[in-house]
Length: 275
Image 1 (cartoon, rainbow, N blue to C red):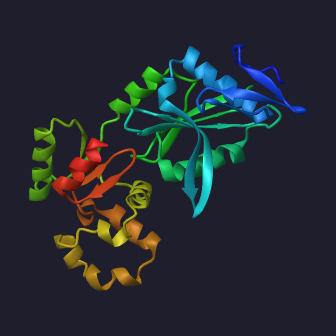
Image 2 (tube, rainbow, N blue to C red):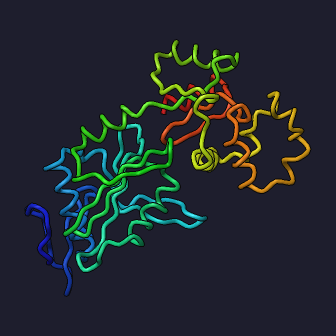
Image 3 (cartoon, helix red, strand yellow):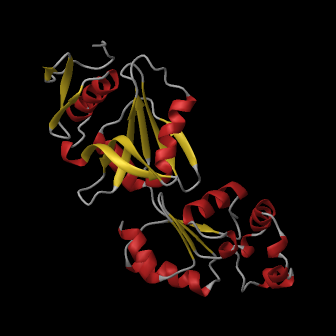
């Protein structure tokens, strides 16, 4: 098999007919030895032995539904025994060069799972990307981090609480967060209005129609007579409108790495924050 840019591990290999099988320690069985599988078994061993990834929180070949079709993640890493996904890992043969198209494949899987970290490896090159869904940004890490560092980083990403201090519902939500001892990044929507791209990202994450993001009880909404105009505007025009004035946006908003809550409902917020 190929020599990889990874430490060598005593992996179990056995013949089967004219081919070979390799032991998958995560699935607990022998599987067909292909170039991609060779990368997977070496890389998972690297994560477990060199980066402290708990074997009990790792799974291979996890089914994911994408556009109505069943796909499989090469490896999925969880943040806790309650199965909160934290890392998706995609493997390629050492003969396959990692390109933007290769990276796009793992991004498509993440549309469903929305994990904070993506890793891709062909055994020779390894890339780890950190995604922040609060502002739809990402950055590449210099190396594959330790599991503890990933988990600490994830836990330090506080929810974003967008509010207006003079709003009674926002004050009620702030009181709830304080009573629950939940630390958040607080942002005054009238001083730091959400940008068009932020709004686009949050609307997609929420799976709500864009109209739900309008503050329909607000003075500006009524003065502009938007009730009769919204139906005739395009999505881009609606986004431009929301981004033009924070008081047009329904508040409060609670943005996490995997969810967006519009308006305050204690039960819904409690459920979202407990995940």
